[in-house]
Image 1 (cartoon, helix red, strand yellow):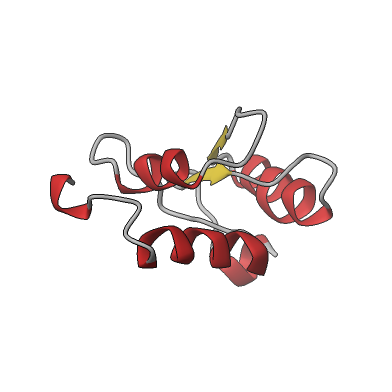
Image 2: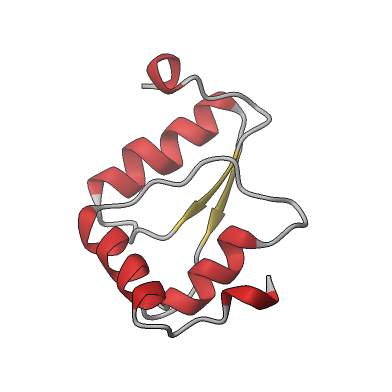
Length: 90
Protein backbone atom coordinates (compact mmCIF):
# COMPACT_ATOMS: atom_id res chain seq x y z
CA UNK A 1 0.00 0.00 0.00
CA UNK A 2 2.78 2.43 0.87
CA UNK A 3 4.47 1.88 -2.45
CA UNK A 4 1.23 2.16 -4.45
CA UNK A 5 0.19 5.38 -2.69
CA UNK A 6 3.76 6.70 -2.58
CA UNK A 7 3.70 7.55 1.11
CA UNK A 8 6.71 9.46 2.39
CA UNK A 9 7.92 10.77 5.72
CA UNK A 10 6.89 14.24 4.53
CA UNK A 11 3.20 13.26 4.50
CA UNK A 12 0.66 14.31 7.12
CA UNK A 13 -2.76 12.69 7.37
CA UNK A 14 -5.83 13.39 9.47
CA UNK A 15 -7.39 10.12 10.62
CA UNK A 16 -11.12 10.70 11.05
CA UNK A 17 -11.99 7.00 11.06
CA UNK A 18 -12.60 5.12 14.29
CA UNK A 19 -9.82 2.78 15.36
CA UNK A 20 -12.13 -0.23 15.10
CA UNK A 21 -12.47 0.44 11.35
CA UNK A 22 -10.06 -1.66 9.29
CA UNK A 23 -9.42 1.15 6.79
CA UNK A 24 -8.54 3.48 9.67
CA UNK A 25 -6.14 0.97 11.19
CA UNK A 26 -4.44 -0.47 8.10
CA UNK A 27 -4.61 2.16 5.37
CA UNK A 28 -4.40 5.32 7.45
CA UNK A 29 -2.65 4.55 10.73
CA UNK A 30 -0.28 1.69 9.87
CA UNK A 31 0.70 3.00 6.41
CA UNK A 32 1.53 6.43 7.80
CA UNK A 33 3.60 4.92 10.60
CA UNK A 34 5.43 2.60 8.20
CA UNK A 35 6.37 5.56 6.01
CA UNK A 36 7.43 7.67 8.98
CA UNK A 37 4.64 10.13 8.18
CA UNK A 38 2.59 12.03 10.74
CA UNK A 39 -0.86 10.69 11.56
CA UNK A 40 -3.09 13.11 13.45
CA UNK A 41 -5.97 11.40 15.20
CA UNK A 42 -9.31 13.23 15.08
CA UNK A 43 -10.15 13.16 18.76
CA UNK A 44 -13.83 14.10 18.84
CA UNK A 45 -16.39 11.80 20.47
CA UNK A 46 -18.66 12.23 17.44
CA UNK A 47 -17.93 13.04 13.80
CA UNK A 48 -18.03 16.81 13.26
CA UNK A 49 -18.02 17.96 9.62
CA UNK A 50 -17.19 21.56 10.47
CA UNK A 51 -14.20 20.58 12.60
CA UNK A 52 -12.89 18.22 9.89
CA UNK A 53 -13.18 20.91 7.21
CA UNK A 54 -11.42 23.43 9.44
CA UNK A 55 -8.58 20.98 9.97
CA UNK A 56 -8.31 20.09 6.28
CA UNK A 57 -8.21 23.64 4.93
CA UNK A 58 -5.95 25.22 7.51
CA UNK A 59 -2.84 26.88 6.15
CA UNK A 60 -0.41 25.99 8.95
CA UNK A 61 0.96 22.44 8.84
CA UNK A 62 -1.37 21.38 6.02
CA UNK A 63 -2.38 17.77 5.56
CA UNK A 64 -1.02 16.14 2.41
CA UNK A 65 -3.21 13.03 2.46
CA UNK A 66 -6.84 12.40 3.34
CA UNK A 67 -8.63 9.06 3.30
CA UNK A 68 -12.11 8.19 4.40
CA UNK A 69 -15.06 6.00 3.53
CA UNK A 70 -17.98 6.98 1.26
CA UNK A 71 -20.22 7.89 4.21
CA UNK A 72 -17.69 10.46 5.42
CA UNK A 73 -17.17 11.94 1.96
CA UNK A 74 -20.95 12.21 1.61
CA UNK A 75 -21.28 13.91 4.99
CA UNK A 76 -18.49 16.40 4.21
CA UNK A 77 -19.88 17.34 0.79
CA UNK A 78 -23.42 17.63 2.16
CA UNK A 79 -22.12 19.99 4.83
CA UNK A 80 -20.74 22.29 2.12
CA UNK A 81 -23.66 21.92 -0.28
CA UNK A 82 -26.18 22.83 2.41
CA UNK A 83 -24.32 26.08 3.05
CA UNK A 84 -23.31 25.14 6.58
CA UNK A 85 -19.82 26.57 6.21
CA UNK A 86 -18.65 30.04 5.27
CA UNK A 87 -15.88 29.18 2.81
CA UNK A 88 -15.11 32.85 2.16
CA UNK A 89 -13.36 33.17 5.53
CA UNK A 90 -10.69 30.59 4.66
